[in-house]
Length: 191
Image 1 (cartoon, rainbow, N blue to C red):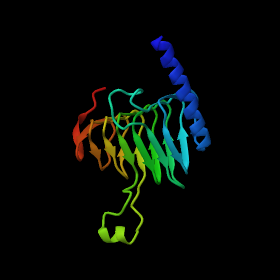
Image 2: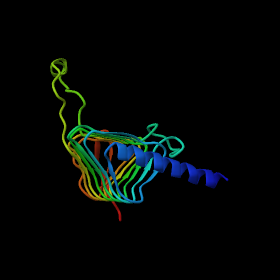
Image 3: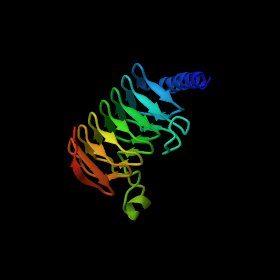
């Protein structure tokens, strides 16, 4: 009975999210699986690849993190999620460009922002100046640990691992483990 109910809920979530993506002008590939309702605000270009899995909500991901997955794309911006990616209760905000490669895993509560949202300087904030923004690229096979924050201008190399709770402020070469606040090199990935 529980298995049947779970399958019914998954089918309902998939249908509801497909409608949200379609109405929001998103392009979603085949075999997209969603668990829980996803908050989508697409005013730019949102593309989701094939065989992507997105968990959203407490029932969909019992390890915690944000209450749901939130995908926001500002006017003129783009967010690309590659084939085979897995997202879990994360928040992604694209004001310019965020590219998530193939087979990337993004842990519960992770946040990816390509903007500062507001200027650092008080005078600039008071004057209403535009915030700084810079593209983010997460290359194929990378893994972003739970509760990590990826900030503007960061490039994370292929198959790199970002430890849980890290704040990434600069480029991470491929095949390395980085962790901490700010994130720093820990060791090479052992494949």
